[in-house]
Length: 534
Picture (tube, rainbow, N blue to C red):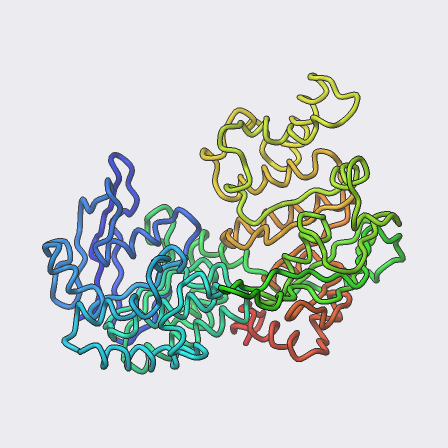
């Protein structure tokens, strides 16, 4: 008998069918990946399996069976007893799952108090041991700390510790590493799978990253619009897909591009130059003293030439986003100079600062947060044109219509951001950035939250626009596969410093610094030989 079985499961919200007769089974100790684009129903399948469907969403057909128990027939009190030692779940965003008002120790102890008869000393001892196993430094001090004191990767480790303390028979991991850099992503998943192997736990890995499927899963199931379109061994699904939709997903996975098509770098005029730039954040304040400031960027020198596409990569906390914000004067630098077209803009103010900022535009990671929900798409895209001299209403409307057509959103001007998909919202953000025809665009993790097919479309669009309009781009990302598709040159940062830089082909084929090699080794990609890149 399977440990978990979804049998002809149908889930709906009113008249909208979210899952349509989904059947899927997991055996004890098995790792199965559930894949598909955003909106395919992956997370709803996971929530149905653990009895956590949102209000207004319900099971209208089929059943969910865990061991020999029908989940849908269990009363709430029995379901609460099943969650934890029976089924555990690691959610996508640990900062939302962890309670910011409670210490880590209190949150680790909560499950053990509810599901075991251990005393306080035993709970503390087990918590410290588990924190050590998930590689948290100084686990005793960690018990008294709060979630905001940890990085994204550390918070995900804390979530894993809280779940695995109860040794669940089934673990559901819902996009557990989407927002993490490649090194942290690999560390977290290696850790997660090692812990589950130790306890014989089955794993349902929900992801849109097929590279992770190749590396970690034995079987895979592909969802599209709530329907199962293909299921089988992970290697067969990835390298011999039978369904057209599965083939589209596999084709969207970034692969090593051919080098013959990549031309040698041509001499270009420097546009933006950073000279020994440093950025500091204030140290923590105590009752009578202030701690030492944190050096987020440490004496970085960097040149972005006109029309050049430069990528800055590195792990979380490496300083890449801070550097980008300093170069665009969104935050002040503590030392060094920033030159734009030969003019020092480090301390520019008034008209000089305004002109510099008008020549620079930014595409943020989360377009939903950066787009005004009260404005239509046309109003959002037109906003940067308010300061352009000589554009009347008809000229502005024409420019907006032209730009929306360029980014593939013709006819979308009257819509609001909430009525768009994630990829469409990112296209709006790109349209807003290029409508002034800027000389420089900074893109901060612009595709990290998108699934593979949408990511491929947005990257192709962005690179095409960059070539057409000849703007220079600083592309900040932890996704090395995306970087290799678009960048002319790559800069690698670690602990606030540049450790290596060079043309994309040379850096990916012959990395010199150990940290660069570690980043490349951790990146999950599919190679043409039919294996996951290690």
